Image 1 (cartoon, rainbow, N blue to C red):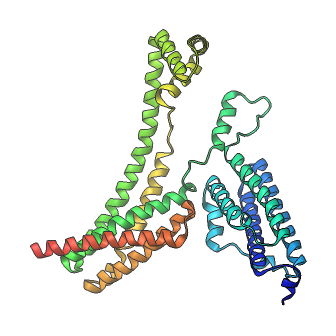
Image 2 (image 1 turned 90 degrees about the horizontal axis):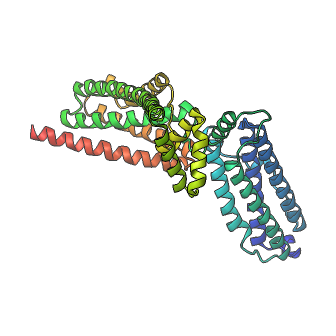
Image 3 (image 1 turned 180 degrees about the horizontal axis):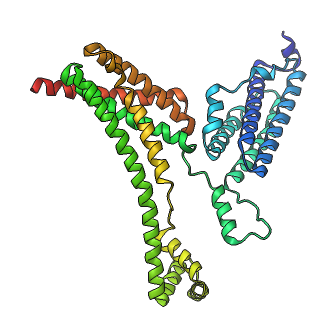
Length: 391
């Protein structure tokens, strides 16, 4: 009989305790990393308190392990993977918090909910389960809570700060995520061109010409498209606001009635809606903003067209050049093979890089992208062979 069994423990109990201990060490490291990245001092303080809570959980688990005669592992032996640390650095904080909330739900169900057969350990797990639920609620509050009011702040400033807090809908981290997705587009498009022309010509010098033309065209097209998209967003917003302002100046009573009807559709009584519309009507700017919100669903001012164009063009061009590079030095079948190898490796790397922002596992994201590259390259290569045969 082992020392552990003599003290009333069992292998299942110890295994679950060690799994819970490891989860608490990792959770603390995650919250500390997020707190170090958080620019809002209040939110950073909440994250640090949550990290301290995980440390308290760890201490209670270690005490139970000691009761069972099981030595506590070295916390330094538990390290976040490099990829996890990169995701914590680059992924949107709100997305990381959602991911962490889902992890804690799974840990609560898998580790703490099932009985171990040891009454004292089960009681401890029950207490920790309640704490983890409160952590999940705290995380949810952080993702949705508005910042506190600042004394003397006007409503517009307050609204700006609240909207600034709502970053959950952002899909990446500034220009880095845009560069990854741009490289993805350029790589996929030009790999298809190179594969198709290689199939049709057997890897002749035409492949290099077609690949370079495709890379340049893709980069310029993406740059121009990004520029026009951002500029169009700004122009459409300005035009919509100008049109609404003109209607308000020419038909103020009609616009008031229109706004009242919008409020009635949202559940206000006719008297209340009319009163609210009349009050807004005495403040033209406020009335205009209300109409823009209700009729147009708000407007987006867009970003900087020049920055968008440069980021999209460069990243797309870099990704598009990868399938072309082997043909600078190698031609024929060897060039086709090397182009396929280099391109598929690049597909995997780009797919893995996307997981920094999607929080998927790097290997599954990379494998998915590689399979897509095989399909695109294989299909266009076969089409090239068919064109060659038809010629």
